[in-house]
Amino acid sequence: MATVTSQVEVPAGVTLPIYMDNHATSPLDPRVLEAMMPFFTNKFGNAASRNHSFGWEAEQAVETAREQIAKLIGASAKEIIFTSGATESDNLAIKGIAEMYRERGNHIITQVTEHKAVLDTCKRLEKYGYRVTYLPVKADGLIDLEDLKRAIDDKTILVTIMAANNEIGVIQPVREIGKICHEKGVIFHTDAVQIIGKAPFNVIQDNVDVASLSGHKIYGPKGVGALYVRRRNPRVQIAAQIDGGGHERGMRSGTLNVPGIVGMGKACEIAMQEMDTEAAYLRGLRDRLKEKLESALDYVHVNGSWEHRLPGNLNMSFVYVEGESLLMGINDVAVSSGSACTSATLEPSYVLKALGLGDDVAHSSIRFGLGRFNTQAEVDYVAAKVIDIVKKLRELSPLYEMVKEGIDLTKIEWQAH
Amino acid sequence: MAYSDKVVDHYNNPRNVGTLDKSSQEVGTGLVGAPECGDVMRLQIKVNPETQVIEEAKFKTFGCGSAIASSSLATEWIKGRTVEDALAIKNTDIVKELALPPVKIHCSVLAEDAIRAAIGDWKKKNGVAENAPAAVESAK
Image 1 (cartoon, one colour):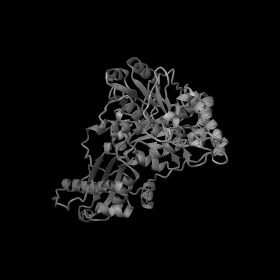
Image 2: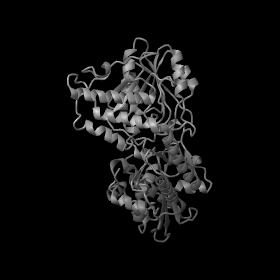
Image 3: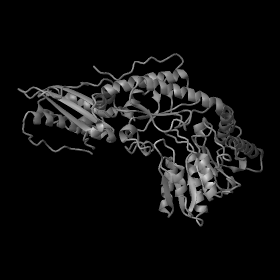
Image 4: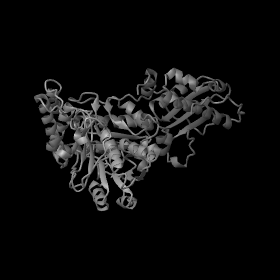
């Protein structure tokens, strides 16, 4: 009798389940937790309280974090605005710039593989009379700079293009995009959530005007993010989207999440110190995983550019095996799939579709997101397990059997349902 | 998503996986779904020409756990039934047996379609009149 249950042995030192979904979120670094703890207990002051030591202490901690974050991206502390997370940062940047520069123009340029926090914000602005250009991406996931140049017109006020993609880890040519924007006098916003602490990112060298940042993707806490807003060459102004006490230089009212901010600051400080060695480590693990999978399985391929990619990202399609069924077989490993069955909408990943991949290949994709706390033993276990389950599911796959018999699947009249 | 114990059981131990000789006169083959939709089921039956009893049923499925379980269950249910009895199986029976959530109902529809397609193929091969079966209760 066929069986899909895996008998792969768990190596010594590996505890199940294994977390390998670090693009979704990352575990809190114990050093970050340690830095945060006092601000949950005796250091509980409101950073906006100006007339007692509780407030001063909180404010001091917030300013230290602002410095730590600014330093990681080459900004100055005054250019950092705290938010509740990167979704809010994206909303604030795009809506705030659209509102502030409405008299100058109403055209915004973005691209199709952006995070929904950017795409849906742009869609909302379309309802309010803004015009949005969604640039396509090439098969490797990168935009074509010539497309960008052509798309900019005299009504363009903002270009918003992510630094690194959350699904395929592809890194866009941020520096060149920023250069084009500056030449044309257009503001450049980038969702830098996935890149900071993982690959070099510097707002000055990379010509970035506004950047969205998140705490929990870099081993910091959830519920805290930041927006970098350039103060000179050019000075960018943003209309507040949350009104109130005028915190954060009037750009974002609301009492500051002091423990969260302290944690995000500490996470940035650690990232700054460890990024180079960590990136090399993750690249080693990631390449090892890829090589193991590729040497044991046929019909696998990497989605998106291999060259321009985050060190911890491997997005791979195991063709003729449906992604959700694969996840079910490796249920002691936390990864993601671009399969429709894993999404609420029953649509396969729009990012993978934008690369020109067929829906069938998108349905077969798995995203491995390696992080600081993954080990080589975990990679070896995950590789063995995936290989085992893919082989078993292919024994169950009519498509795999047909392809092995030499049948061209594209020539079959499928009854789409 | 949490799966029911029965879905997990069929996924872990799928029944009747395999391939029958599709050129055989006694074998009917149904291939339904589409790769771009994320599920394709191939269900095959071997029918006794005397009794019209389905003596063997085999499947292969590309799809999620619920699709695999639905087709696995379908082969279990049709084995030993006559062709006409097998046509009485409804997708709603599969939904109930496997406790499929609403987003997975299409998997059961596909399994019912696969049974009908396999039987239809066998009838065509054997010159048995297609006596219009009840309309498919699809939840497409």
